[in-house]
Each structure stands twice: as C-alpha cells, then as structure tokens.
Length: 336
Image (spheres, rainbow, N blue to C red):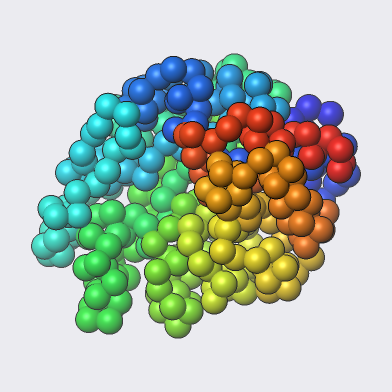
C-alpha cells in the first residue's frame, strides 16, 4: 500500500496498513532544502522540491501546495509585504477593502491569470506529474472568514459582523465565487484534497459562527465536493465552542489545533469523522524530545480512535528537531 492509497483508504472508511502521516510543513521544508522562504512562497518549483524531499525523508504520506494565505488577496490587488526568509504578509494598515464600497467594483481574479494563485495551480500540476500516483496531493484555499479578513482587515471585519452584516454576506459571496474557481483549477491540475484554511473563524463566538460563517463554509465545502474533491478543514486556534458545527460541514478530514482536546472533537463530531492533530507544534514537537512526541501521538490516537491521521496541531515550525519529526512515522509503523 503506497501513501496515496493509504490516505484514500482511511478517508473512504477502508482498512489501512498504518496511520497516515500528514503534518503541515512550510518553513521547515524550505529550510530543509536550503532555500529562503521568500523563494519557497514565490516559485512553485522550489515549493514542490521542498515538499517532495521532506515527504521522502520523513515518510509523510502527502505533499501540499500551501505556503501562505496571501495568494487570493494578492491577485485581487491587495498590498502584500514580501520578505526574503519569512512568509508574505498582508498589510492590515491598508486593506484592499478598507473602503467597503470598493467591493461592488472588485472582479474575481482568474486562478490561471499568471498571478500567485496560478503559481499554486502550477505546483499542483507538478506534484501530480512527479508524485501523483504515490503521494496524496493537497491543494489549498482560504475560507470565507479568513479571506474576508484578508481583504477587509481582521479588526474591521469583526466589527462588520455587528455593524453591517449585509456587507459581510456580500463579501463572503465574493469570496465563495473566488475560492470555488481556485479550488476547481487545483482539482483539475490533479490534487486529491483541498485544504480549507479559515483561521479567523476561531476568533468569533458560536452565535456569529453559526449565523454568518458556517453557511458560507458549508457552501464552499459542498461546492468542492460537487466537483469531485475532498476537503481538509483547518481552523487554527481554540475551536472548542465550534466543534459540533464544524462536524456538520461534512469535511472528509478535520484538523485540531493543540488547545482543542481530541476527546472533545470526537464527542462532538461522532466516530465517523476523520480527525488530525492536536499536538502542540511548539511546546511538544519543537521543544520536547522523541519520547514526549511519541507519548502525545499515542494519547491523541487513543482518544481519536481509528479515524485518525497523525499531524501536529498546526504548522511544523522551522526549527523543529528532525528526530522529533521522524517520530511520526516511527509511531505509525509501530502502532499500525
């Protein structure tokens, strides 16, 4: 059973020879191949090389197109700061939609128009060419709350939920159209699953989440699945108040950040939901030792049951000891 078959089997409710290993690596991968992160985020060929080499060295079952959340907003015309060895960052002080009346004139950019989205689509195609039969290939899009915050500014969007919910609906409608087009382009390039990153959703309470965010996440998930895709939901932060609603999205895979106990997610989402995480990527994976990492993996696996994929709660940090990263595969091979 190869890596792609292993993940497909687990997501499809079939038997596997061991737990899949699918931690998110970005800066760790760039450092591993000796490339500054600015190049990793700017050139799909560098990203693909980093992902393939890390997957081979550490026994990961997937490769991922993710690098930073600023691709869609950049192609919309947002101001993005680029750095030599750090991820690109959107400038909150001059958000593209600081003047919300500009939304009416904003055009959905083409994911094949030569911009930063197109670079990710090229990564997807190159992954498919080089490893698509052996590794599970992951694309990535931003969720409605995260992308809405990228375009509007995070603090302003939080106020919009209270002061102008009609605008929020219009903004999320624009985001949905853009992200579905982006997802389609990546699926057509050959990815097996779309990561849906909606980090800003963890900043709202359950009432606002259910009323304004969840319906648009659901439309995005359903749209991706209607194209034949699968969805990996990734909401950074403390999502404990949102777990039951997240489970109702129907995603094939749900990531859990380190502050969200696996047992709580399992209780809220039921036995059939595939979970991943929730190891603390800093205090455990980076700062611990192999025994500590192994113990946390064993604990998470026990609480999650068999519908579980080995991963950290969020990105593997760039300075994580390599032996600690190797502990994922070692545990998987031992535990089955």
